[in-house]
Image 1: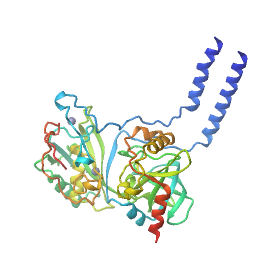
Image 2: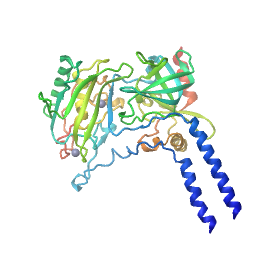
Image 3: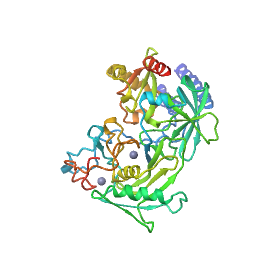
Image 4: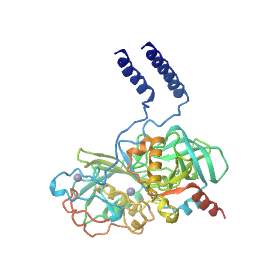
Length: 218
Length: 208
Ligand SMILES: [Zn+2]
Ligand SMILES: [Zn+2]
């Protein structure tokens, strides 16, 4: 009997220690990601995948780091560049997202640590941050990056807006098993996905869109 | 017996370690389009629309009735005449569907103002919307981004949100006022009546 108690206590202490050390290195997260009152934003224009690429200063697969805080209308995040397709070569940027912790855009929760996305960016002006970029079409030009059990990477358009402009022959969302797996993984990565009404109707092999973007360079 | 007592303690520690405080909000958006709070059986055929039909109603946030009032923000020094004209003209595009009135004494339910954000693709925004328990608007704000070309059409679109219409993004809805981009190919709401929606609380709804 004592053995069980002892083992449990040791495990508990170990877990507490792990918990604490995690706490220390924990990224700074936005305190609110979906506000009570939300914004309907009208955008200047729509973009096809090709136009989004063409008209961006930078195109990159990024990973969100710390939440840096709210501006008046936008939120600032640190973002690490995982792979860059266009623009000035750089390792880290400050990413601007439309909406703040007090008012977020409808269907567009604030990003959080570890979110990975393909984004189309314009260099920000008149900000307190250097190397600051904003997403040209907000959620209308945004693809999530997700991985399957074999480590293959995919781009997912959870909004289905940019995906509408990509050749349907590249869309592999009809693979129901894969769709479910990637959706599960996305929820594991970021539980807020489960709260939203996203559909995963636009899924692409990362390599196929990489090739497409390679073609845009010429 | 002793072992049984340990398990709850251990569970509590586990909970403490693993339950992260990330859940800031639990609002679920699931089912917004499928369900309706109008539980009156007469309304059971109600359909709140979607991209496929070219109109979509926000049942949790809309105007009750056919009368909308607004006032211009008195605290906004950038709200020049040109912006006010966009609002007045945008409102008049809804004539015959809903009555949108400018309250000069500042008592309008909605406030119209400007803002400036260069680092965003947003032209204008419908925000600050409060509702009663039925989802009926009690106050709201329309903001025009001075960094972009605002027009009477973009304002008519924003008034569509006040009425209770959602944005549309599918390319086939480019020809709808509620298309979410300024590149929409129409400048006012079309005037044909939607079958089955005449009893909806905003009065006759129209395909937009
Ligand atoms: Zn809108
Ligand atoms: Zn109602």
